[in-house]
Image 1 (cartoon, rainbow, N blue to C red):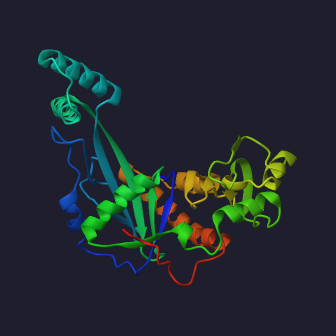
Image 2 (image 1 turned 90 degrees about the vertical axis):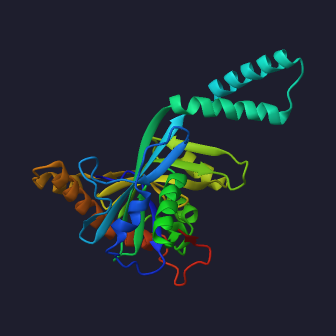
Image 3 (image 1 turned 180 degrees about the vertical axis):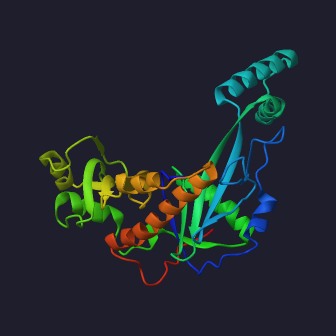
Length: 312
């Protein structure tokens, strides 16, 4: 169980481990789509089908898993079939249909097609670190992370969190740009890798994406001197983690390097559940060490919590 993306949130209040957390999640346990539902979202066991346990705890870290099921109705197919039905109706009635009538035909068609549509499921994992004060969601997009937070909010009543980019003193874009233009070189435990995204600050400005590229070359400096800033940057931390970090301090394409993978490989397990337990334990402890350092690298934590937090 190794997270690949980190959407990081600071718990604004001390999170007390609720012994009834499992029971509070049960009313929103995952269920498949009904015949006329476009999608459903609910909680499932992080351990998979072999378990019904909705909250998995190791060393005080709490793992959760949200599952979404969606029905697939290709837009182009629906639009083509709708147009055919509209033309057929207009020929029968000898007149052009109004907007409300066309919408009604489309809605009727979707209602008819939904029970026969294919479904697909996706899972989003997250864990809570009550001691460190973090909530981490393994999601490639902020929207998927918000789906999980929204469901957790409904179950708990409230959960006030702030995205990590709103608690650091220094803006990620400014810090990463300083690393590349040598105005403020990266700290000793950060190694710049071979990938970045540069953007002009204005909304319609140019975007430069570099992969497998030496970021110390003069052409990169030229882009920075022309006013572009670093919005994404691939780095390695302490030879333990490698990842791409963006302007929101979201972590993408996270890899746990040999030092950590070797530790996991040395631990013998007898079942998939045991392997999950070991991997989650090693991962969560590693990230518990990394996250405070990440905040420190970007200027430390703002003393007073920003008023623009997420009540999620």
